[in-house]
Figure 1 (cartoon, helix red, strand yellow):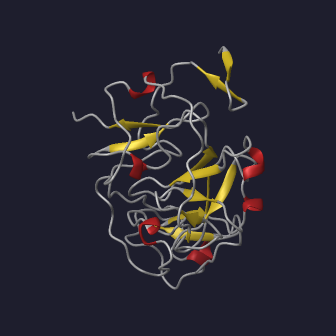
Figure 2 (spheres, helix red, strand yellow):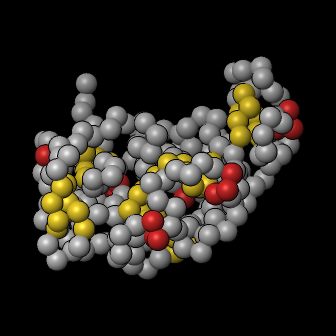
Figure 3 (cartoon, rainbow, N blue to C red):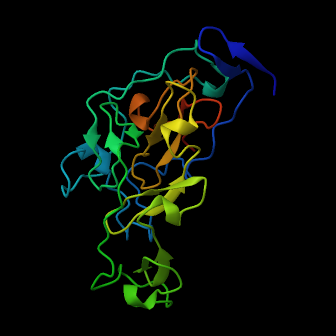
Length: 247
């Protein structure tokens, strides 16, 4: 890949062609309103806590479409590169409803804030029903690693701090325990000056992802992308809006 210096920003801008990653892959978007069975949040997939930032404990229905987005979704969004621009600020930051010190900006993107351990309700009195598998019947049956829980009869393992995740992951808090999620940055210090580490929590998913903002981003979260089935994707080079095709 050949890179050229972006004038006035002091950052490297690349002109490569990138492909939208398939929906449902790590760090990308599940179908709107569809939960993630047996996730590290103990079966809480489908709720979107960032829609109610600052109202911890409130139940939030799945969000079906993005509203109020400003980024266009062209037929081949990976080919359309915007003019370099300053980073998107975090206006009116509010605490993430499930904790961990994360912040939710007015545009529904995430920032790291003053990090803290994720709360946990484990072990629970009852497992996630129904029991499709026979590996466990209760959370206390899952002992291979810390923070084990029984999801649909299968053992899963969560986290409460970043130290329990890999170098390219962060511990993102869930309803019952945190889960390790994809992270190209673990602090603003990992990013170019003035382009903070920013997260996107896709609609109907608990699989947030984090990466440095770039001067070529067209979106920072799914909420920036208008219309049904639109979502924010792209990694390393820049984020851009894409849309699921129908049949």
